[in-house]
Picture (cartoon, rainbow, N blue to C red):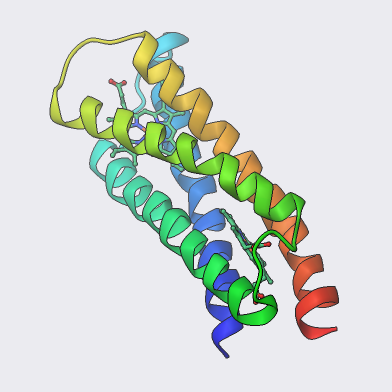
Length: 143
Ligand code: HEM
Ligand code: HEM
């Protein structure tokens, strides 16, 4: 049972991240492409963005715990492990920049762009984690 916690939480977070990215893209079109008449759902983007990134970070630790429990060593999953590690500093930047922009309102250009680019990259990385994670489940955990 315990081995399902990490895959299930991360899969739900990846799916929700696609919606959070969509909300951010609406903001991008308004702020940088000059599209008018669209409303950025600010509070929803912030609340659901925080939910996604908190789960990514917490379930990262749960994944480490599950791997330790299964194999008594870390890094067995190689690419999945390394990409997970690489995501950590980006998650910190994505959350940190988001908090700053939410708490200290101002007209900005570069920080939203950096926040959007880093977080879009994180969504891609998380989708790839889903892809490798399914094979790990099939071949290394259940197989
Ligand atoms: C999966 C997570 C996230 C993704 C994919 C994402 C993506 C984006 C994108 C693409 C933009 C538009 C950037 C631009 O207009 O150049 C944006 C804006 C914004 N995001 Fe996020 N974001 C995420 C998480 C968060 C979190 C956790 C927070 C707050 C703690 C946050 C707060 C904001 C705010 C306040 C803006 C508007 C900034 C402004 O235009 O002044 N985001 N986000
Ligand atoms: C944001 C996305 C994710 C991150 C950051 C992440 C990170 C990690 C890390 C760091 C480990 C420990 C690996 C090791 O020590 O070799 C791990 C294990 C694992 N991950 Fe993920 N992961 C993510 C998404 C997923 C998804 C979506 C699935 C499956 C659908 C998955 C399936 C697994 C499995 C099966 C293990 C082995 C745990 C066990 O022994 O039961 N992961 N993950």
